[in-house]
Amino acid sequence: MKVEWVSLSGENIADIADLAQRCMRRDSGLRATASRAFLERRYAGSTVKAVGAFKGGHLLACGAVRPLTGSSVVVGLVDPAHRGRGLGSELFDRLLDVAKERSERLQVETESLTQEAHEIFRSRGFDRVFAEDIYRCDLTDPLPQVPLLRDVEVEEWKESNQGAFYDAYRASFEDRPGFPGWSQAQWVDWLVDETFLPQCSLVAKTGNGIPIGFVTCAQEFLVQVGTVPEWRQRGLGRGLAIAALERMRVSGSTEVFLDINVNNPASAALFQGLGFSVIARRARYEQR
Image (cartoon, rainbow, N blue to C red):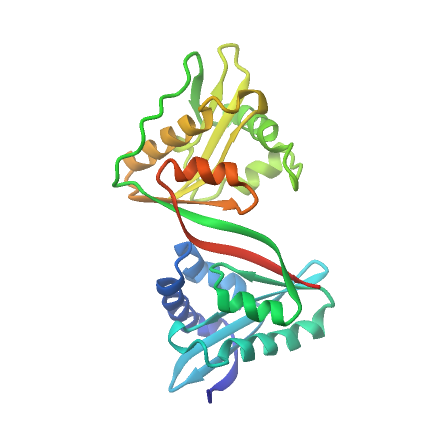
């Protein structure tokens, strides 16, 4: 396909956003990944090198290379109507040429993995090192009735009980591979932003005040659900999730999303049982 390849900048964000929306309609995924704010972080800035393919004034493909500590990260989009013609391969090869000038260690990120993209990455010597599925739940449909356990107290997120949330988070996840070991301040800083929903985020405690499980939420997103090991297999996580979803529905949300690592079948089964279904897969690849 004959196209014109040009360098992109922040002035092209509107074109990139239009392309991202076309990709979203075909590939699905989190709507936030097609927002201008998200795209500006990946395709604009003094340290980002971005390129795009235009034909007849329309952006058909774009990609960018941005620096990360000790490496470079490659991202890209190809118009669904123009796939299968070598455009994705040419885009990726151009991005690799840019990335190799900056760093020996390369990563590829994709928010909606397709089979075509997977094959391109693999053919260029990249292996998938991380993947998580994006799930969606329609909150206009009835939710399962899952009562919370008896003799368990539940509190909303407040400044005064952030320590209880953190204790539940740490006890729930520290036995999992890749646990970051964040301090309370680091975890709260990662969790709380302008989209955070304190009224839908809950911590469960025993009668004597010991945290045993938690759920945290952002706008239309279930961020984390965890249960400490000795309280698992009792329905506590399901009950907390349903309680949070009910609160989100009352607040006006009609749908909610979450992500689950592909190596976590137990969580996948739990949320599929609550009405969630997979809509896309996010992934990261690294060079062999």
